[in-house]
Image (cartoon, rainbow, N blue to C red; front, side, top):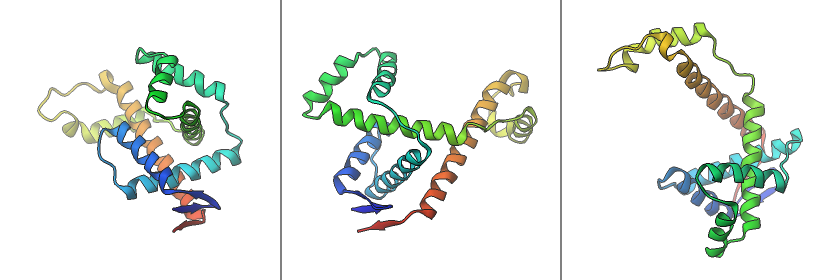
Length: 176
């Protein structure tokens, strides 16, 4: 069990996070990694509450319907799959709401990140030998958009990681 700013997180909760991570990554996830992710998620959800970021059941369901429609599924099918496993759709929706809230915090924290043409060009010039090992070197102009997007994603991941680390540093976390 772990206590994060007076909020208890039980072993069963960590197991849920572990199962979710394994389903997402299609890889085995260790207990320590699942626990760290659980702590990070709790901290981000607490920060979302401080920032007034929330999601209603209806918003979560609409978001879920959009995601599953891209996979050719319906909400009724997903509900049936969940309940056929003996799980509660309501609990699954609560978990999904948390994911949507975390997604909104990520957007809030990283929304001002941009990559300039100069920055992308400098990266291209410094890394083109690595980027195109054994292949024809593509002109910068042909990949500028993709490169800027990839660099922005890297910056966003780093910014959010730094943000979570700052939350951890200022939090009262007790591992029991």
